[in-house]
Length: 510
Ligand SMILES: Nc1ncnc2c1ncn2[C@@H]1O[C@H](COP(=O)(O)OP(=O)(O)O)[C@@H](O)[C@H]1O
Ligand SMILES: [Mg+2]
Image (cartoon, rainbow, N blue to C red; front, side):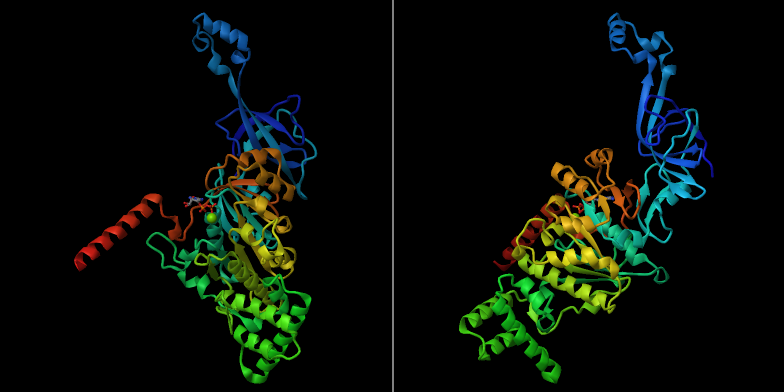
């Protein structure tokens, strides 16, 4: 469907050029952020309205207006001034649709060329939206759903960045819904979330009226119930968890583990750290100071109540096509323990995926700056290495990352720069903005300025998934919002109800 003309390209000092086309509005109202199409010698040019300026010849000279009004005259009453108001829109050409595909504009349209609102099909083609893609929102002013192709969005990783409260977790919930809603014939991947605040647990609860129920496709594992099987720990993983391990200690521990694993294969059953410690005590080859150090390290790990004879849950229960597993870390206070869990499960997922023993997956890391920090010693960043490895190598194996952070500047640059698509919501901190600009080539100053003024749920997506930066509005979620989101009033009421109940119970006892 061809829409009607809304304007005509004008000739100014800087327009029309391949990067800047201004037009005068001849019909209706236009908005910044709207897309238009302009006839072009090579085909149809698609352009984005970057600014809208109202002009009126009667009000061009400040001194005359002041003079005139100072004498008690009203310009609008005495002159046909209103008829002289006109609107000029500045646009940025994005591409030209030619018979041989979309090209970057290299020549301008001619002055006098007619301008129309962009056809939605054209826009859809330009951004590469996919009917079977992940529905994240809507392009404002155009009746067009943002449906991103799964491969383009996730194959080379996604970063979701904004200040706290701008809508990151909400947008990621929409993404998860899209993954869980996928039909088998379109290809379903598994989804695992490391969730430090327990924000995603509601996916596994039966939905209240008005919400879509995902509880049959979602599993929540509480951090304190998680166990890591000691026989599954390689010396490499252990060195990551115990950064102070010396070379000698590492060698001896590696030998003991190999012996215990051999015993296990011989039918002696799986082992835990108590058994490893016993084997160290019984070993005659290890020097006493090495023994003491190893026993101390292992006791420290034992005290975390995290290690056992077997993994709980097993990786295969966690990573299933079309399913979501939420690893709810909100009940763990110890940062090191959280990092060990993330590190272990991420390594395990990556290595199992390389062997094609689990389906392709998306690993979502909330508060990614905690698990993959920019400046922190090895001891304080146990999970950083594996996140970097997946960021660098994951795409070859169908292991995708979604890193979420409200402190981009504290997020590891190596990992961030591997996220070829970035979903950016409101950001105000100049250091964070600079950090993002450094890790993304496609972002221009005007877009950067707009990021600071976005509203909750408004987003800019840049990179691989869309090709050209796009501002859009995140859609409403279908799943139930998390309990975590109660208002301060509600929290205050809950507290007082609890107190009243306790008081009446005490009274009854007296
Ligand atoms: N697209 C949206 N539509 C409606 N409400 C939203 C949207 N995005 C966020 N919100 C609301 O804004 C608040 C903060 O969102 P949240 O996703 O928790 O922010 P963040 O994870 O960035 O800290 C929540 O109460 C959420 O319901
Ligand atoms: Mg959040």
